[in-house]
Image (cartoon, rainbow, N blue to C red; front, side):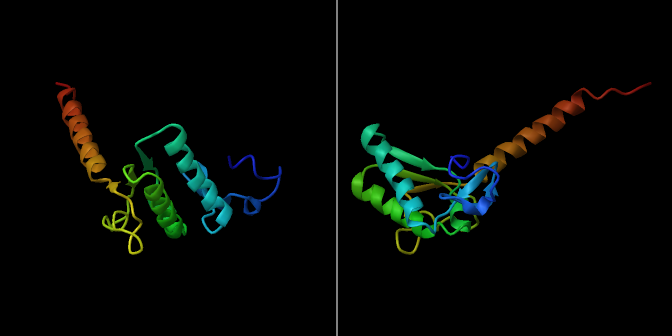
Length: 143
């Protein structure tokens, strides 16, 4: 989407939807813009209503938090909760304060659950250990 709202050969600060800051190969939404926030909330409502989904997993909520998206997250979770109270809202949140995304509005972001990096880090550690053990088995020594 970031390629569609810019004129060619212009700087990244002239976007309708995004900031000039990137994250993992894409641009960060401009959460300070009312129209951007409404566009994203409308998308969530569209999926709830048209596809009758029973929940939403929000990717990279930590990035939203670090780029001024707290008000947006509160508006989003409150609107989704109003539209479909039984829909679960899961945040992918990597920051140190694990309670913040699942604390209710206005003190937190209002998500029902949050995924952290504890399981990911534990699995990576196990995989690294297995690779070390496997490599040790096949180490050749010359006599």
